[in-house]
Image (cartoon, rainbow over all chains, first blue to last red; front, top):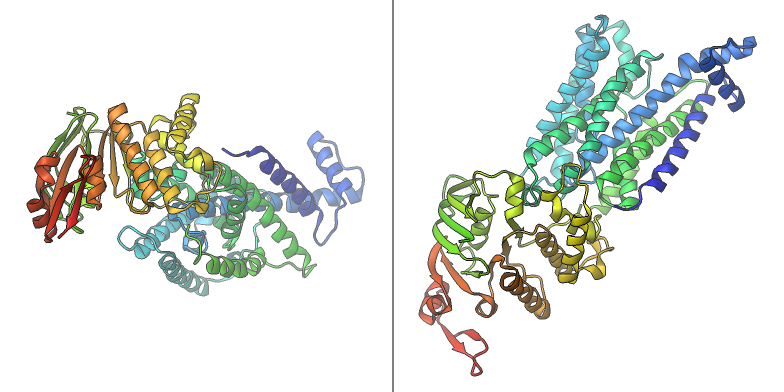
Length: 341
Length: 256
């Protein structure tokens, strides 16, 4: 195993910087000093000293901090699942968005929203669960469609992904057009604009993202062996079917956790693992944790840009990631002709 | 008997690609599987290594029924060097060789000191340690083949299956590769099964020979039983001569 400590430390440092930038930037600028003071005071339980501090406290605790944490988890979940899909499908272009998992999860979430489940007390369990099941179905469908005998050609994977996710998106749009009022907000949500505020989505997302990502980390070694193809993995003593099923489930759970609470944010799962693979090589025991932290940093940077670019309004963060991601995708597509996975 | 193979039929679907292949090999024997293109050499290896979906028959290694064991114990009994090997380019050579220890490691893939020492020895043996820190994407086809051999040896199995392992190698490495395989069988008592196209190399390194035709056994036995001009001429549908060099060192098969 090559050294993991140093790059991981660097990524965490970048994460801390990004977190402080993220809670400071927005329609009201909060200086770093004040931000630290507010958090410190809240932790100690002392009341804010001035009106200004009280305003800062409200903004920080009810808006910025939960949103920042949501972005951290979402970025980690998207990059982690993207990394796992790439290894599993042995394809540098696999990403939760391109293989249809994200659109599937979006459809699942919208279905449960249409049926009015969010009104029930278990909404924070039901929406992600429904997103998870739909995403699992989509991944399975894409996998079956793209498979040629035992191989999984890159172009087939992308075409099947595009086809299935268009279908899912069309269904989603249909449901949205028939809906009214509250559901229309979901349209913005689908573009990756986090319209949910407060701590509830953070707490709702946490268990799903945590289980998904920890599961991926636990099976990182099996994913290493699977990258050599089914036959070699089998000959090295891996139960291929079981290992693959586990990894698909955990990767899709991560995707669903991200999509159910922040909408469809593309390309994070494509760009981040790809960059890190150049630096650290293919061992998933390094690549997965690094991609997760890196994904969190990347998405937060995109979120900050989304809030600053047209301030005081804000863009859905998915627009920013797609603006960076699509050219990057074309770049990889060109390259991948030369080098096999 | 180290390896007992008794295949009634095996194939990719219900129809049989190979059928009626029965042989036993002792400890330390090197079996050369020969036969024309499409005679079923690769399918035989895939059947013994159980990657084929449909296999009817019996396979035993040291008395263990391969159809009754789990993946892990099977990977401790039998290692495979496939014909064309795909290796993800972003892995380091030593990481790939260490993966041969997978059947001995737990599911997190944590290598013990023993695993690491074993892998070090294997890399010296296969001459891979010179480029152990290189990424697999930078290797030549021949180097990659040796890495895969090293990984198979790291599995430390009594049986080793190889499917035309020398097809990407130049003359020198062909000889080195097969000499290494030979010494593994002679000195370490491994049973080695190699599918080969080159009859001269087969004659030089094989202890036993299995000639295949149309997915079935044509003949099985030692050189005197199999490497006969009339048999080879029939199998390859081409008249050949079998010549022993004057110094007696090797047998050469020449088309007439």
